[in-house]
Image (cartoon, rainbow over all chains, first blue to last red):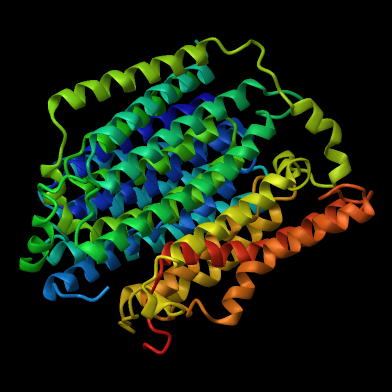
Amino acid sequence: MTSFLLAMTFFVVVMVAVGLFCVLRGASNADRMMAVQLFGTGGIAALLLAGVANGTEGVVEVVLTLSVLAAFAAVAFVKADESGAKDDDRPEQGP
Amino acid sequence: MRIAADIFTIVAILTGAFFFLAGTVGLLRFPDTLTRLHALTKADNLGLGLVVLGLLPQSSSVFGGLKMILVWLLVLLASATVSQLIARAARRGGPHP
Amino acid sequence: MNAPTLFGLCAAVLVGFGLYGLIVHPQPLRKVLSFNLMGSGVFLVCAVIARRGAAAGMGGDPVPQALLITAIVVAFAASALAVALMLRQFDETGSSSLSNDPGPAPAKPAAKGEA
Amino acid sequence: MSIALHLALIALLLALAFWTVVARETFAAVAGFVSYGLLLTLAWVALSAVDVALTEAAIGAGLTGALLIGATSRLRKTEAAARAERPGRATRVLAAIVATAVAAAIAACVLLLPDPGPSLAPEVAQNLASTGVGNPITAVLMSFRAMDTMLEAIVLLFGLIGIWSLASDRYWGGRPGLAPVVEPNGILAYLARVLPPIGLVVGIYILWVGADYPGGKFQGGTVLAAMWLLLLMSGLHDAPAVSQRWVRLALVAGPAVFILVGVLGVFVAGAFLGYPEGLAKPLIIVIEVALLPSLAVTLTLLLMGPPQRSESSP
């Protein structure tokens, strides 16, 4: 069972890696933000698989933290993007 | 009983891995940002759900299993929100040139 | 060659990448990124040393691991300070250049005005 | 099988680091770097440093990403000008030589590390019982090397003072960040209503579980900070003015309790930060519980930057 789970971890990591370079090279910043999201889901799956395979205690806590914060970077991106758009509308913004 | 649980694990995780594969193929093949977003946030979440389902019989405690299910629910919530937010940003014509 | 050694060699290359980026990139934000890369390389060396000290039923020597936790949090605080400094400079001058060279620098506030 | 997984991780780490350094656009580099931070979490687990992985997951995946993405977006207009400043070929070649030399030196050091490696693990294991906690890392952080942890909490506070001191005079004491804009039915407001209660529970759980398993106040505090930041970013809640008394109190309370317990140790146990026999665990819990809200507020305000609006601004 352990080697099966490790093999699956390897597979998921490879899938994430392939997807990652596809979106990082993508055309827009929205594409690139997807890279981060991809890592959220795929990384969580890989961590869970590896954690159960090796019987490492505490991996579930790591994954729990990751999942609570999964949306955080993307929210920051969207907010920054909105305020950036506003900056464009009025270049003479105050400090 | 042990063997049945192991077979369940293997089947569920293999199916999950297939959805990860599908998600990646989608990222590689789909033509624009919105369709790629669709591939990413749908297929990978199903993949993660199946992986969690498969790992449940291997979990050492009930509480550990519950935490894994919570993880999946949180990722679903995050993905659903993020896909909307990113899609809106993409529709605005991409944040920055 | 075992896993800790491989990660140690990876860490050495990461420090190299970070150092190169730190020297080559003119933008301060890119320098912060590169510096963080360098830092993570150093952290990785530290984790490798901890892993090699696995004993007494622990997966690694807990002392360097505890130091790593401290290091990661402090590195974040340092990055936050660096980012605040560069945003303040941008608010003040409309530029994020670190150059003392009077050549390209005066052109930037004007560029901001017409944007 | 395990070695193939490690090799894949290493290859991906190197590829992402390379991308971060060579990417043309800053945002592409930042996106690469945030993914790199998430990948590091896997690397820490591979090196059996689960506590470190937890910290990286909280700080690297959450706060650092938000900080860098926000900054990139603000500094976007300077990008074209900065590209013109790119150094010439000679400098780049020289930089590559220097970087290669440093990397080679570190690689040599790694290969020459003594075998078996020196370790304090047996000492920690021997004295673990005297601290009353089961997680050796928490024991190191809160007992054997408690001084480092105390100074760290104070360094964070100094970092925040440094950031606040960048405020312009007229906004001193005001609120950090932009004025909140709420879209009450937007998806962001929805997330900011649903997630923080869950995050609050998870953050406190991670603090609590840290006594015996991977976890602790830094990781828990970061999760709490991220939840508050989510509320601030969604506009449902406005950032407090930095001159408000409760903000100041919240910032200082944790380090103050830590110092107080330390001074108490001088009288009771004969050393600064010495814990009297049998009271180690309760005192560690008191310090950790006091530090949690302080760290959460400090980390949040570190990310919000210097005050940018007057206190009365909406």
